[in-house]
Image (cartoon, rainbow, N blue to C red):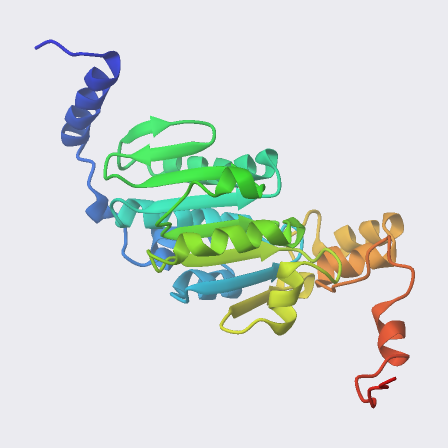
Length: 273
């Protein structure tokens, strides 16, 4: 048999390996929680279990640093790609480096399960499986993200740092597919779409995870010792933002939100002249 290209040869070889090695997506649990615990061998916290068990189409994760939010997004991304043929998963972040970091977790989990479904294409920024599913990454610019359509799962990492125009551009990607939108972030000031959706948005399922919600042995050498060292180094404003999920004022803000609120009022009579 002759092949038109090396790529077509590789595809046939992967199909043969799939039969020989007994690759079968039926080995993947239907529930993402079971996939995380039984297949990947992860020990989940309560909030992580609740997040993976949810089928809500709009989810916000307001989480402290190193709480495992990107890991949970990666678990769901891979689970969708393996169990739902021809699905498109897009991982979006403010920078290419951040998007690659989250995808790196997806790739690590894919290797952990022994590449249970062969890859048609395997890159640093994406993965295409033999069942037609794709996982793609994109840096957070409105121009580079418009090309995606019929997205099954859209993950926006570090969502508090994306531009408003980007958020408005990605929403239509889910219109036809009825896909899921997951936005996850630590706070970053009292502005932007993530802050607005968290404080005033409707139709979202919201998960808030502060350092108090994490097990005592989550940080090394211990949570208490780690936070004590951080408090010696970082200003209180950063501690409140990064570990306790407060939306604090930005460095450029001259007057606090509380001060502005205390000297303004919506209860007034318009002055016509």
